[in-house]
Length: 91
Image (cartoon, rainbow, N blue to C red; front, side, top):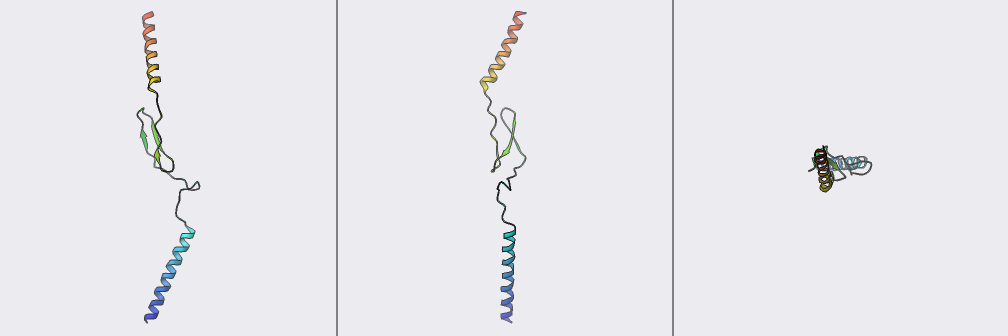
């Protein structure tokens, strides 16, 4: 009786091991590759200039904020202001 129980346990263990092995061959672990791209969450980060950037890349990090040049913006604003002042003075 003890021998029969041992044989059934060994047979069950071999069957479970075979099932797990076959399952691992048919369904390999998911690895991010070009055929399986990484999918990022649809979050957005608001940049200091008011634009929004999303997550990109294999590690789903936020994209860098666009670089704005403060001197160009200030120059445009000053020249527009001085043009308006000049036109007001000439009228």
